[in-house]
Image 1 (cartoon, rainbow, N blue to C red):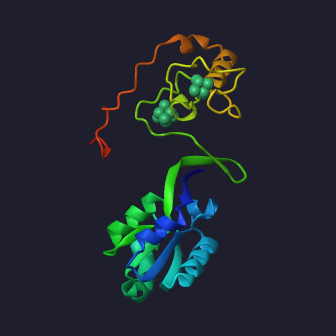
Image 2 (image 1 turned 90 degrees about the vertical axis):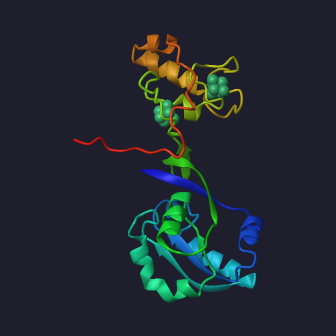
Length: 217
Ligand code: SF4
Ligand code: SF4
């Protein structure tokens, strides 16, 4: 399953963001951050304890089922009074969750986590980034393996000169993705794909913020 991968912000940053805000309502999420143990029930409880020892008053806390869902407002309406009493919401979800809640509630929001990437659990407790959503997907020519995300240099025409016995020169513990691509294409008898020159990525292709509209039928 695809997940938003997050990590807790440094304590000093959270302290700085909460400066002058004394009454706090804490929100976690029951999906990605529960799995990564950054914003599930135990982490929300630990945060409550942490804030209390720092002299903050926690007016309440909850773990919403899916923070980035539009139904979050409805779920949070059960906590109306505790949220009203709070100076701010400390949100232990990915940035999608924080933004969804910010749009749904007229309240100051403080993120407690940094959102690192969209990833997939490749082994128990290990999450790998699989796609940076670059907008010009080339994996049809690289055997379904993404070099944009997995090559340390993001090379779309690889390998670089540093690949060594199948390992990456930047991180010797990591397989060189272009070696993996080579092996895969060879196995599929499609090695010619690798000889095709990929044009440099067009960073102007999609102006920010990205938008997608379904075509009208
Ligand atoms: S090339 Fe890689 S980063 Fe770009 S869209 Fe395809 S899988 Fe995602
Ligand atoms: S060794 Fe391979 S993965 Fe590492 S930077 Fe060079 S091409 Fe990319």
